[in-house]
Length: 239
Image 1 (cartoon, rainbow, N blue to C red):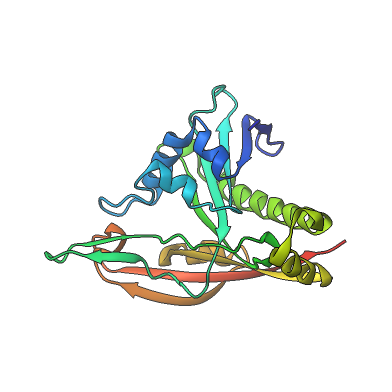
Image 2 (image 1 turned 180 degrees about the horizontal axis):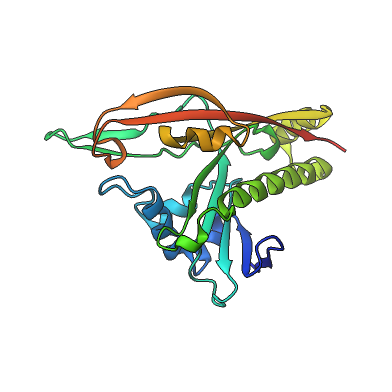
């Protein structure tokens, strides 16, 4: 779980983690707090528990975490993002429980993913956040950098999986072979966000798919909440 210096951001280093590595990392609690602060809606937490943080990644997801170099123990992250499997059939509808008093409990659902990495063509950058109480971090481009690095890492992992079919067996091997037979594989990246963030993602190549209004109380909101879904296609080439 070593960190690497970031050339374009002197004084910062980053690391890529899978769910097991994130679960064991000393930054986990601080990362949970940072993301919850960034996504705050009333009393609702984006990640209500520590387990929810790492579980979001599933088997094939990854998390990038950025630290200042002065944080030698790598405990206090300043930026993060995740990429995980996305099931378009689920959409943005939250999993909710309506209590007798009308209060709505809801949270982002975890989409159970296919076992074979190469069979996944739908991905979602999620939990993109920077430390809210440090103005010096704003407009540096750390959030965009995090998402870019996750995309680069995903393409590398897909390429490695194609080159090592012996690591896959049975039904997975058949789907692996099918995915490997194409010269180019189309991937779709999905973003689910509050409506005011749509222009931010549109400037980065995402196209608006739809907007949906949710009633007060969803995800802890104090008023009606507009959620947008955007997507961007990208190609994964086979050498």
